Amino acid sequence: QKEVEQNSGPLSVPEGAIASLNCTYSDRGSQSFFWYRQYSGKSPELIMSIYSNGDKEDGRFTAQLNKASQYVSLLIRDSQPSDSATYLCAVPYGNKLVFGAGTILRVKS
Amino acid sequence: SQTIHQWPATLVQPVGSPLSLECTVEGTSNPNLYWYRQAAGRGLQLLFYSVGIGQISSEVPQNLSASRPQDRQFILSSKKLLLSDSGFYLCAWSEGGALPQYFGPGTRLLVL
Image: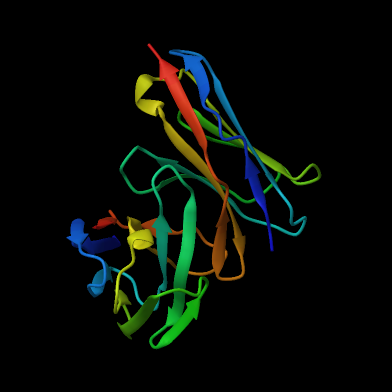
């Protein structure tokens, strides 16, 4: 069974700071990685996909993938209180996604 | 564009009663479909998935079942609900196994 590990947090950052969320995975052969954001009481929303080593930027979000070290991270620049949510990392396994338990992010104004 | 619907949004049911939750997807064909449950403050638990009509894979043996009577319709059922069935039920779709999943709005179920 593939495993995806995340620090549960909560990670607290002040407004305007960079939030760094990390995820490690067990299967060295994984090729795709996804980050989801889940607000309290709502369903998860896909915010980033990354398929190759290096960085992928989308607005204030940057996903970083290091396949050799088997980790993927999500950086949120200029964090806003509206970024406060649980962030889930997911890795495909056959026809399924294996999700991490999620990291709670709290951005304090 | 694709849209995924779930209903009802909330449901309160007595222990021992039956359950039927429905999920439909618009704007795509032959999607992979998934049912998840999320207990309060917990992670996502995959219950069932389907790669085609009539094809159901069960991840967790329990008193729930799933069916896919049409290409874009996925139903989660139970004959007799347990207290432990309470939770947030999420339906999701994807275009393939290695591709991202997109979630519906969810159904919040409370079994009393």
